[in-house]
Length: 171
Image 1: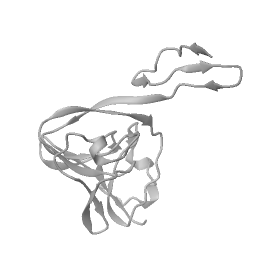
Image 2 (image 1 turned 180 degrees about the horizontal axis):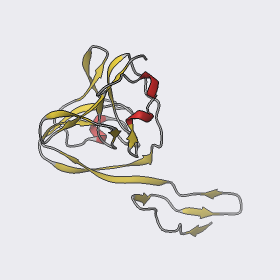
Image 3 (image 1 turned 30 degrees about the vertical axis):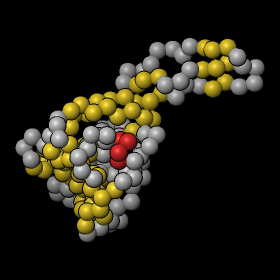
């Protein structure tokens, strides 16, 4: 078996594999998104923007001081296992830049209910109007959390690593 070196990494990606050449197989490198996201002291409205090897809350947010709270229908539920595309309230004792490392998530399907839903992000920013435009309620319909002002703010895009309240007119 001969080891082959893969070319340079695309910006924002970290190579976690090499290519092995043999007479019977070629195994290609898997690129993983690596990005740092600013987390505030206290509560953060967050999501997992990459496909991680373990979706356990303790593995994703090792420094969290609270459960990962997700809104389901009429109440908040503590989640030990997270999901791509979902939003969570998570508390941290200190501000930090948090690295997310995992496979890029170019798209995700998320189940929603009519009314307000806690929604997470994918790897790249997404314009809210591109999310099933005919089922989103008219008006200011998407809100993110401003940790510095401790309040919600209307938004027109979903940013990686953050979570949002989005109001849908139907499921």
